[in-house]
Image (tube, rainbow, N blue to C red):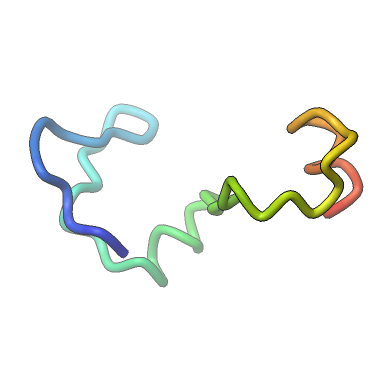
Length: 52
C-alpha cells in the first residue's frame, strides 16, 4: 500500500492510517483499482457488480 502522505483515514470513527493492509481487509474494506478498463463500456458501479 501507498503510505498516507497527509491527513488521516477513518473507518467507523477509528483512525486506520497505520493499520496493516491485511487487517484493513478484515474490516471489510477492499480496493478497486481504476484505469484497467476491464469493461470499458460500463460505469464504475456496473464493473463492481460484475466483479462481485
